[in-house]
Image 1 (tube, helix red, strand yellow):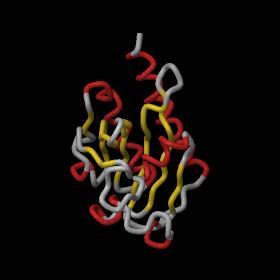
Image 2 (cartoon, rainbow, N blue to C red):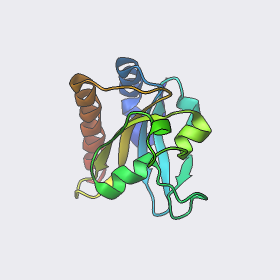
Image 3 (cartoon, helix red, strand yellow):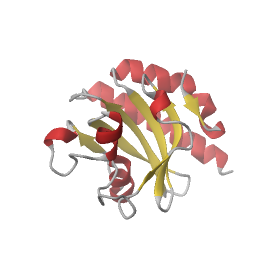
Image 4 (spheres, helix red, strand yellow):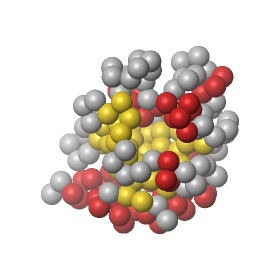
Length: 155
């Protein structure tokens, strides 16, 4: 069963179902902090790889200065798809690939009630993967559920 911070408890079943639907190793909700990306929810086969509260250093602090996938999504405010980081110079050797063997990424920005980027929802996998339009829509629909929870919590 997925694990999450209290704010996202109601989405645990959705996270696990989405990981199965997409056939991916991990589905995450990540929060952007000034110097880190922090795990807020984790599901899929690799849910224990990303414990709640775990943090990845942003590129300004990382030893190799390389951006995290989710950091790029937060900074750009746009979705990011990396088919296979091992074959893409910009992403080769990134933390998720090196530490966890996850070289495939699809992530969407999550905005809070005032439109500020809170973080991301993302799918990670250990091998190259194409996402169908239906799979992309499913991850985007999950993003909308996360945003609805954020909007409700700010009242």
